[in-house]
Amino acid sequence: MSKRAVLEVIALDARDAVAAQAGGADRLEVVTDIAADGLTPPVPAFAAIRAAVDLDLRVMLRLSDGFAAGSAGNAEDIARLVRAAGELRAAGADQFVLGFLDTEGGVDLAAVEGVVAELDGCPWTFHRAIDHTADRDALRKQCEGLPGLDTYLTAGSAAGVDDGLAVLIAESGRHGEQGYEQQLLVGGGLRLDHVPALRAAGIDAFHIGGAARPGGWTGPVSAGAVGEWRRVLDGE
Image 1: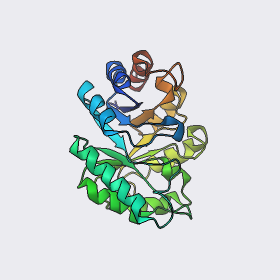
Image 2: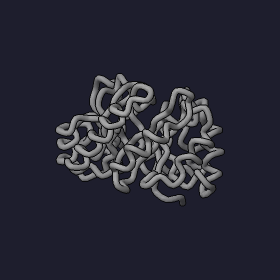
Image 3: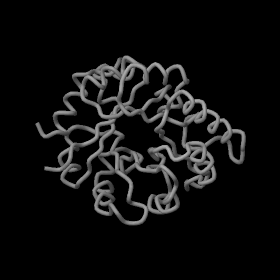
């Protein structure tokens, strides 16, 4: 039997966090403003979640919609991200989520390196910006060796897991190659019916947002919905 799969759930507040933990989540992605696909949460919101649960928390470092670190060439935008990271670390955050692209669709390595330097080795996920890059393989190889990078959150396609399933399975098969040492965390239009093929391919980490909220994004995380995912991932 393959090892227990990681289940990561998006949490917007402490109520979400408590429900996700009750349902069997292993880790939370902490964000605000889901209408912009998840931005950096205010420090008090992070602190409330940290006080409410004992799960691992990966905190988003993203200050605006889209995948740019800010306006082109604006060092102050990167400085704002660095400040946000420092404030969250001071409040107890020790895992993060980030990823920035340049105007050509390649990785904005200067922005990523600038923020990662502030994390001082904390583990972090390169998020779904990889699904919008011009060259996934090149991005992975350019990010190789960045301190703390241990996970890629991806649907295999900008359109979601339905379109990206073959890419995800192929990339899982390359695990251990240069640029492919990190854990593949699948999310983005992920459904329960995708799980068997992904698990058969050796993928062992899954990320859900709307799937944890039967009432949609205007409603809270449901412990029951998270529990259903936990049971499927555990093969029950």
